[in-house]
Length: 143
Ligand code: TYD
Image 1 (tube, rainbow, N blue to C red):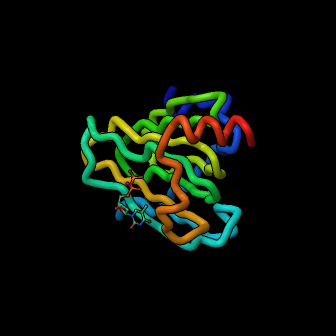
Image 2 (image 1 turned 45 degrees about the vertical axis):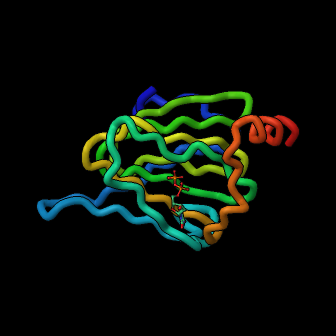
């Protein structure tokens, strides 16, 4: 599935498309806390210098909201709510997803020069990750 024809998303996942302000000098994209996302932004991190066969993510969060936003290049994002799993190939700058807690995510098939920005409502905490898929399924299916 590509970012141009997304239909049904797993539970806790919302499609987000930001305006791109482009002119002869290049492109600009804006994310504002409590406007572009329904939370105050506590943390921003970026994923870059990846290659096609690298696999990132492979976890869910116990209690965290997050916007995963494509800046440039392309990659595939797999999202799984414990019942439904989809893979979306993001190709357009400014397209992404807003993800609630208990959604498993995997990032793969990065193009050269891919840049992904993530915005979250919480500071980083290792204890807040669910990194075992079976544990995730048990939690997600009982929530
Ligand atoms: P990791 O969660 O494995 O990245 P991904 O989900 O993209 O596969 O994080 C890689 C390393 O970066 C790990 O040592 C933890 C650290 N890290 C932070 O210190 N702060 C953060 O906000 C994030 C996301 C990761």
